[in-house]
Amino acid sequence: MRLKSGEFEALGTTIMYELPEAFFKTSSQAIKTEAERIEAKFSRFIETSDVCQLNKHLNEWVEVDAEFYFLLKTAHTLQTISHDQLNFGTTTLLEHWGYDAGYNLKAQAPAIAVEPLEIKLKPGLVKINVPLDLGAFGKGYFLDQVCEILKAHNVETFMVNAGGDISFKTKSTEPPFKFFLEDPRTQKRLIGECERRHGFLCASSPSKRKWGVFHHLIKTKSAQPAEDYLITYVQGEDSGLIADALSTAFFVSNFKNIEANFAAYKTHFPSIEVLGVSAEGQIWRSSNFEGTLYKA
Image 1 (cartoon, rainbow, N blue to C red):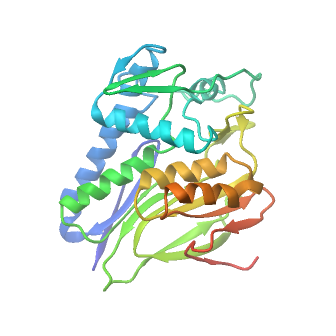
Image 2 (cartoon, rainbow, N blue to C red):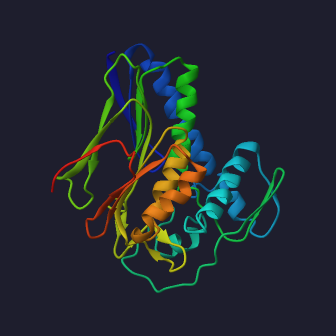
């Protein structure tokens, strides 16, 4: 099947996609509209978003709609499963470093204490103690929504890449998609490739979002940029949100614990597979991570 390509800017990145020509016009607009909707509703950079409004009412019970409640409940679950390694309460620290709506990025800044985020939930209500940011799974959630949109449009072959977080599907009678695994140390080198027919491939790396001594992937306990990994990749079959979140969770953990962390996450999310590259260039991948690694 012949595919047509398009791209647009949203969710803080370039979103690229490939769709069948017969569905391109209608489905392209639907994808863009959904990205703009999610950004307007959940970006911490937009004053009128639900996230910004919640962040203005710390330590108060706030009524939220079903979609926002689902995302907050999922964030709470992921924080619990990861033992707070994945924490959605990094807004104060990121803004202290200048990663705010105005992108007033600072090369360095004094250390500050950061209180861990606590999410308390009642049916339809939420209470948080510090400002939150759902960026750890925002693009993954967008990919899940896109999959539902394209399913409703009867699109059976597609690829959507939201800044390195990818959803894709192709028929068994068509060639699989091929994805290249980049080496974040240089754009001129790849570490491998994988071919897959359907699912999600999500990556976390600060290589394209660094300023001064800082980046956006933070170790909760030290309140410092994570330094154990160069990049993490997560393959999943069921949820872009989960694949996106876990690629971040691995990155902000200790590389020496990757095998144990994988085993723990696998009990909750059986379809995931992971590949991690340490700061020293060591590679670990789970036994069923699909792909071929190139020789150094």
